[in-house]
Image (cartoon, rainbow, N blue to C red):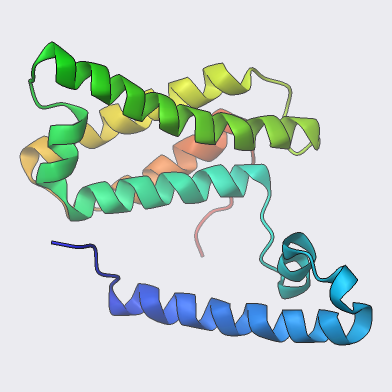
Length: 167
């Protein structure tokens, strides 16, 4: 079954799209086409995030999608399988590590994150996130309250960022 966005998620995305379009129009009228880069529009819309926020957002997406498809996610992460499947799992994990590492490296270079090894931090995050999801996925407890928010907090702390308490 294909992934379908929940109505609340779709409403949030629609609102963000409207915000981005309005920002692009404002920027275009002030700066012309030359001033309308993706980064400039995001900044104008107030949605450009720090490296830590981008990595935390990726963690949120991974965890949320895993918990919405627990059987598939458990098979992908931990179900006993042939060595060939384990090899493919490693390819999958390395791809996620590389995405995280690029964002972490950019954050370190921009001074948003403290000096650290992007590859090591990214690998540790991917491993910790996967391990933290295995229990709820194996138990079939997709509604594990607080798992996603706890993983976001963990991610931000692991990066050396500041955690802002939920209001």
